[in-house]
Amino acid sequence: TNTRKFLIAILSAVSFLLLYFSFPLIPAADFLKVDFSILPVLIALVIFDFKSAIGVLLLRSLLKLLLNNGGPGSMIGLPMNFVALGVFVWGLTILEEKSNKQEYILGSVLGTILLTVAMVVLNYIYAVPLYAKFANFDIAQFIGLYKYLFAMVVPFNLLEGLIFSVAFALIYAPLKSILVKL
Image 1 (spheres, rainbow, N blue to C red):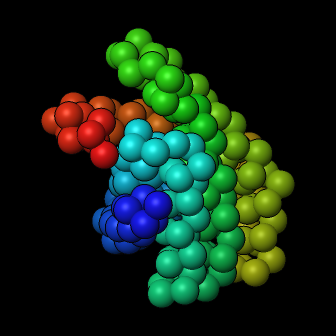
Image 2 (tube, helix red, strand yellow):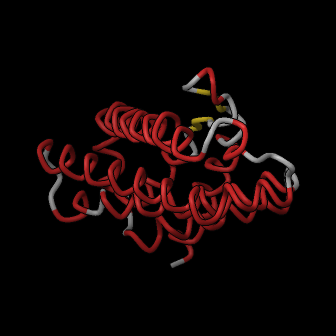
């Protein structure tokens, strides 16, 4: 419906704006940053469904590419971010069927594990080689590939999944009655 399309567009725009508010979690890897652009995506999941949540994520990513393309960093990192957040949301699809705390915690744990595994695999086969080739940043030679993956990527993504889960739980609780009516 038009209302659904309008809400997806609004959530995508808010998600895009939230990309600008990011912060590093690991001082030694200040290029690994957390942002809260996932929150509107999760709201779309609760209001509509998984397909709509991915639509918000896709529109947010396209807006980033079109309006604020950061060069090789964006071209390499944004597809990874899309996949990582997509699998995190997929892990949370349990919310669609049951809306209790235990299922949310289970979905959050699953989403965080999927997010972490996806980022390790993507960094290994996609990001590290491309950053070395196109951005002149070879992390494998700088600190070592496995040290980077297991001392930076894994802890960062585990913390990121925890932050996403807690942040969404905090905003969902007061908004639940409104979101359920939409």
